[in-house]
Image 1 (tube, rainbow, N blue to C red):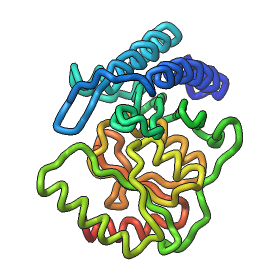
Image 2: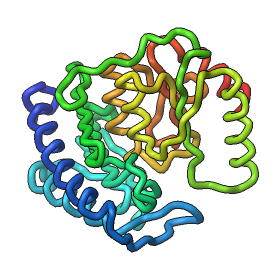
Image 3: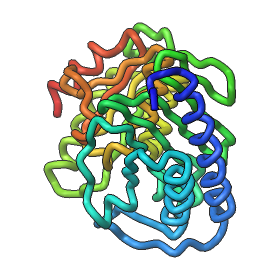
Image 4: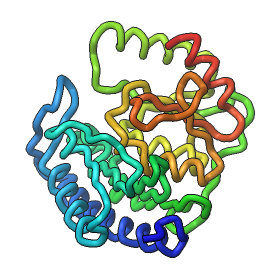
Length: 272
């Protein structure tokens, strides 16, 4: 299948949107109910809803694209993260923001990205609680509920809104590094947000509600595959916190609008 042809990618996007909305309905249905919660680690959680969403997404994508590979967060937590090849691969977080979901805090989303030759080419991020559907196809722009979106034009870090996340580790070295970075940036930026969803943070930069974002130790490629495509299509930048090329398998991500990369990297490199 000539997957780089735009019609093929549009059909991939249409299926991804359809299945994201199905999973989103499962999240919505379970949001205000009592949740059966399991621990994957000290603070990393998984619920029956995570698993139900992944089952729905996997089933439909396998049916629609039998030759494609699939990588999902819950499957990877059981079987280990498979190697990302050049084959067309769907990279899926069935419920990004599980801790938010458990606490009924409405920053949760379904994230579905199609990656070819290790490059994201289709992205869907859907928050069913806020009814926000972010979509993008490589080379065709990024959209929120069908309206074109763009990263902000903010040029001064002092006027910028920065998002980050604490991550799932609580060892002293990680906590100290996290605290030191937050302390540094609080003197540099207008304000700082920790919303609990990597995918939503990337989309936040894409639509201009955030100006910068970094996370050191995100869960895996499912957190970033869709969001990085959407952000780049909105004119934003995604890069390694060192300023180099972004590697979705590295667990390190930084992002900004088109102007603030230098200021963000300067702080990250000095205090990581």
